[in-house]
Length: 310
Image 1 (tube, one colour):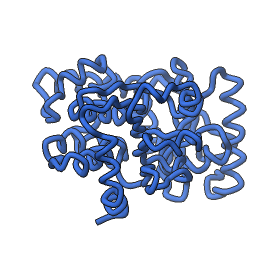
Image 2 (cartoon, rainbow, N blue to C red):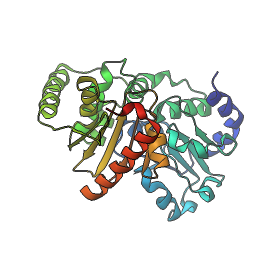
Image 3 (spheres, one colour):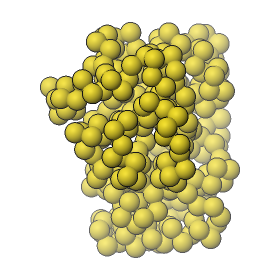
Image 4 (cartoon, one colour):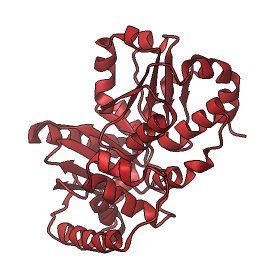
């Protein structure tokens, strides 16, 4: 039994009051993310009155300041969190998250469960299992595949294909396709995925990688295949860290393959973003902002990760 399980059991009576089927429940989860969408699918599969809002992590504090909490019996954050302490003190709030940049607000006695163990979808499935007393085995296939991808375990070959399907389809289509929570692809889907792998290879070969200020840190710009390009840059060109600016969404992904580099901690301390130990991100509304933020990252790496110097 891990600490999350122990803390859940201590709070389970209160959680059952908040997560009753006839309650009006607001789910706030991660936008543009398969893990966040998995949380949405779980909640809507389990409860009748769920209203879902998807946000970027940078927007949560502002959102809750303007939220009329009287409209809901329960407000649950999943795969995302707020740092607004007044909001976190509300008795109707639950937080279930795994991002290291939010560990500082963890408080199980207030139903704020933040542990760097599983992805948000898998953590939420454990909450629902404890509350409903129903085994999560019904949902475990899809949940485990999402967990494999979101935590960058990549032990299940289905997870990369699943995330490709998530980004290639409308979210409602993805929900309908995997409403049974089983991950088994058709021949047509496998053929489509082969084409996607070819597109990724082509995009990577056409994308320049620039070295960041004498460090073994690469900088890329692209608007597609973000995670794939980051992974290829670290495995094929042997960068310890890769920074990829999504020119369409104006978001920046930072990935590390080095155990000594904590991306989420670095971005949080620089006050530009957050995330996990091996992956995180931030916003850059224009090229000047992006250049300024990469300068911060370079200075931080030179100070704390001297082994990155070339």
